[in-house]
Length: 387
Image (cartoon, rainbow, N blue to C red; front, top):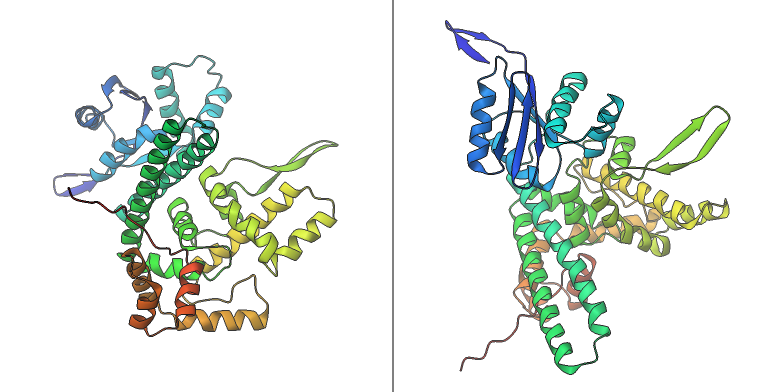
């Protein structure tokens, strides 16, 4: 909008396509074609040129790691930006007959995609959510590096090489512990996150770390229906039929990091879940392959977590019998959220469980059990000896 003669005039948005590279941005719109650097100076030039158009700019680009800084800049300036799936963008280019592919062509294609499909602006995550995702993703990267380093360490036979490998593994483990502390600090500043994590941890197989990863990867939990949340995670089967030919249904797309987060809780559910374990066995008896049944368990578990995120009160976990659910719910209610936060803080400071039990007025067994159930563990820092 802009003001003219004391009256508000509403301008129709004009989609501005941006092809994002590591160092440069190609920009395309009717009456505009330029190339700028992928930095703060380039962002200001892009915004200045786009605002000179006859209509208000609505930016559209592919979602990638190189697009994060641009998206944050445009959101801070209160301009609309749509981040599209690169696969959908490529499909649109093929549908419109664009076989050639250059940065300039891709920018023009994105602008046309905006004009044809009129996509809605991508919601801008708040600072807490963005930081939670950033730290959680980094922790996942370091966990993958740690696994690789440990596998390589097992194949080293030279003592000097093994000592060097141990030092690197110890450094990575220290970084992971530091990130765990950062995640705990982020969660402690948000009562809403703490409440959701407490509800998720009521479900066996979902620990504190897994709950945090779930909330980081899919902030939409609790806002979507069961079909959309399953599709968002990529665990919804899609039908593929043509005439008399029918291909077995299969999952497609979705968020890879979210499926990775759900994998281990689903594996635990196959063994310890009184509801999901029979559900899995029934699918296997019907001839479903292991992976198909496992994905079905992942989908059912995610749908229930989506239900828990929507509720404002603790619900009996889906995976327990009526008597067991009441017992577990009562036991969980005895531990208030503030007590769990205090438990995590004391454990992070290295306080022994015996002293924690005395401070909280709990039994040693209860403190140890709650810490284990919520994924809270002691962090042992290296001792520095001064010369």
